[in-house]
Length: 601
Ligand code: GCB
Image (cartoon, rainbow, N blue to C red; front, top):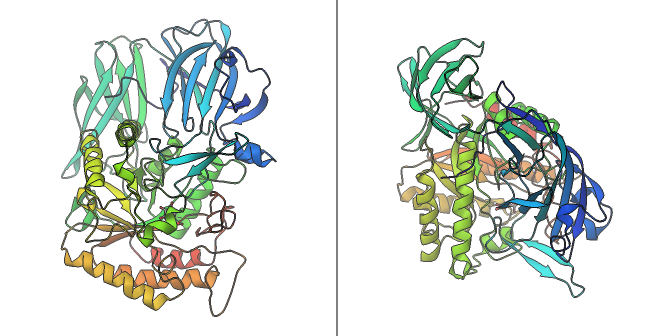
């Protein structure tokens, strides 16, 4: 179990959270000499850098945009003299790894670029004074990092990231930073789980706290009226006539946890929760006992200039576009997103498949093309595998700890397109799934996205999944342009799955075509808007022919940046929307199809 708290910062009678977002100091450290030269005591030659944002797309030179190696951030902050208890610094993420210093002293280190980094500054920060935080970050990829990749070193010593995945290696402090004051004996974590009893709901809760002060838990409705209360670090609240969190019709209660029995509590934490159940039964995915057909997108955190930096404005636009299409679900491909995405999904009633950054588990910088062609790279047969596995499990643990209470999160995705055909892969993923299953208090379904090479009679990992997610590109990577042949091959594969009688739901977590918004052609050609439409029509026919298909998440919501190469035209253009979030023609096709389906059910 994690020994630190990942609770999202809140302000109330007992806690203060102040954002440190803004303009920080920044410096590249290509020789990695910074720590030895004392940069943690002040950067020698910094430039300014906005936080949160990826650093790459501000720059006008390739060397800076594509920088790979160590880089430093620094800022100053004031800690009020009257702050009692603990002082924490919480980064939404630092990509991909970091050492955090306060006033020149190392406080913590963290591996993984998509989950929070929490530095406890209680002993190091001066109260009533100005303090310096320095972050030594690094964005190199390896076969034991998540995501996986490599680093190429040019003859002049310049390093270049070589991702084994199809998105740009954006890096930096890409999410908000909070300075947090909380009591010494604090609420560290909580979890909720639900059962429905007729019109009533039972909310089972546990609270983890420092010390042994008494715990009180109250549930308030959307108007702030108390609807249930209980004492103790674990227990059950009965909510009469509960209003459920429904797909695209969300209702949120507030869970208020207090520590201590005085008039003013010793600590207080409030969070919005939604009452809903999740179950996979036979070939159906059930939310609150009713089957739901998933429709929506694989996404990325990606936008002009910001790179992967979180922006409320971009997130708001994305939700408006997704709602306009009639979607009800998205997958956080290929890493856990900023927490604010989940907060919005909770409010909007969107379902999320939450994905750990286990992508690139195939030794290829063109894995999107190589995988489907049957290339095999012995990925899980190398000495780095134990380190990779430990890292993978650690990140699953952090992801579940961070996201477990969001009603929007209904499933966990533990991989994207690894090699799955060997006994080594089977052993590896059995260990990942076993670890994950012990961690979720709600026992949500677990899955992972399988590429073409993970064929029905070869794959040794689909057996681990509660529902099966397929990424399939018949009519693009396979038999592109020859849609009739593509459809025949697609149906042949689906017939093989059908013959297995697995009695589990199947969800298409990727299908799509690169399409340029400028291109029209009649008759169609690949890359034209007309082709994207014809391709989708063929895919829809296939999906609709198999009743165990219970979802379609198209690739991708919007065009996004990738590494350069002859396979990518300034990025991946499989968006249903452009990178600027304007619809391609096919967006109207999706809107027609999805709006004709019931939202839930
Ligand atoms: C995939 C990958 C995704 C790529 C996509 C593509 O299978 O999971 O990361 O972007 O294909 O467009 O090739």
